[in-house]
Image (cartoon, rainbow, N blue to C red; front, top):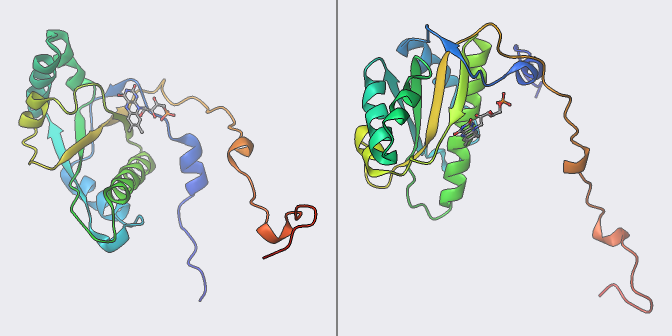
Length: 197
Ligand SMILES: Cc1cc2nc3c(=O)[nH]c(=O)nc-3n(C[C@H](O)[C@H](O)[C@H](O)COP(=O)(O)O)c2cc1C
């Protein structure tokens, strides 16, 4: 089979993606989010369980989250945290019991979708920052997002138009310490007087 060549410069996307600290007004609309998410869903997904959902918060819906963050932390200043971008996409894991797909694999798929989604947003010129913070599990936050029992909040993609001064060049990373080659067991020297069996 002839491999299908990618049409997008994935290496360039990975090299230039940054998490902008500052965002300006303007954000993808729901139709664009749906189109990008349909692409992000192409990541590996054991059993095709689709064990996740995304929840869009715009405008005053962010105030509801802000109020919940303030209540959870006991600090009214936390309310402003939800306003750091015009659009927040809450990432929700909805794991199910499956004989062959443990929960960690379902989490892996949700993380992969979120990562791909962030790259696709970047591909369209939008900035996004994956943020969690200490209050994801707090009851007021769960209530504000109307999470069902068993659902788990994995954080928010803070999304918007990146400020022009954001996105400087990345350092050149060194992958060598993270990459090694396993020598075949047969190539290992046998202990003196040892046998193969
Ligand atoms: C699951 C997850 C949760 C994160 N939570 C936070 C957070 O709460 N606050 C924060 O400043 N960065 C958080 N980050 C890191 C940022 O998303 C970002 O990757 C980091 O600031 C590095 O910037 P860069 O993406 O441009 O390399 C989180 C990343 C991941 C993957």
